[in-house]
Image 1 (tube, rainbow, N blue to C red):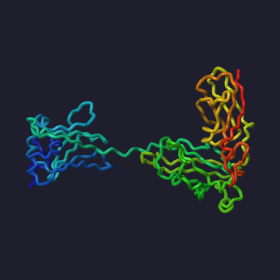
Image 2 (image 1 turned 60 degrees about the horizontal axis):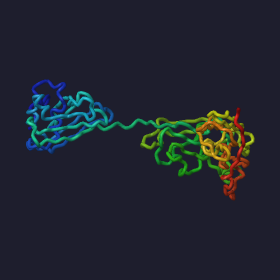
Image 3 (image 1 turned 30 degrees about the horizontal axis):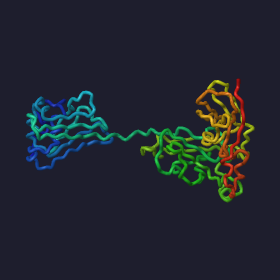
Image 4 (image 1 turned 180 degrees about the vertical axis):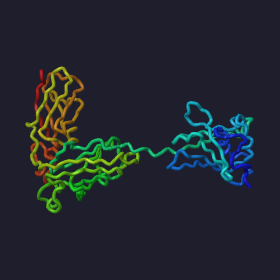
Length: 390
């Protein structure tokens, strides 16, 4: 036999806005009044992910006599209380009750707040007995909305050489630890995926905070005359257009997919097999006593990642500290000093690791670097002197 005299209401008065705390906390206790129920005590928050606003709480194992004792609202509030954690006004939650078989279903007037906890406090009886208890229930928080996106891809220009060596993908937030190349594809001008254009390695291609991923075109296909180049041809063909596609399913550091799939279209120009020439750089000198930026302009785009760490300024042989910026499609490097420019002997320095988009270095073309190369030019330093403007 059902414990409840009516399937419509547990109270003899209308319950459209009866306070939810009246019964809910009582349903969380294993007080002596439970012994009349044959079902074990349980509390279940039922929430449909598709309709979170319809969530309700279902409770079993509570003696109906306890509910009848709570018919008077004011008296009930002395016994039960359900309040939202962190609420500015800690008033009891309002809701309606209904019998559901041998269970009680509580539905709040206003939907439970996703991710918020609710304190359920039971005093035992209206006199404030000592056998009270309190617990918490909560509505599951919704999945976080994807927020991370591809912020930049370098090189940023619309034209790259056919023997392009690498690309940098910068994200708006740290990314996860899954292999990155699984989510990067190169499409040709007929929207067909290019087969194996990238070097199949994934380790050590991230910066320290995992916001920049380096994609290497397979150098074996970029160099003429060696086996991969003869068998598969170059990854990029001059005169054609390509699309770099970065899939939305690439997970960020919070395990969420990217906000959207990213596509970057570019055109392939002739291969670049000429070494860098520092003499061709244009230096825009700042004025003495100011913090105007020093500018160094190049006749071609250089490697964005290397530009940030392979060029610097010295004053009387000592490094000068300042804020560095690269712009104009990686054809301009600027540095704003931390202190005003003072008279001295100035020079722009470039480390041996500096490269253009095709991997050519100062005084040395990429294709010259062979099997026996030990990279002894990495530590080399090339300099260009300049004087402050007046």
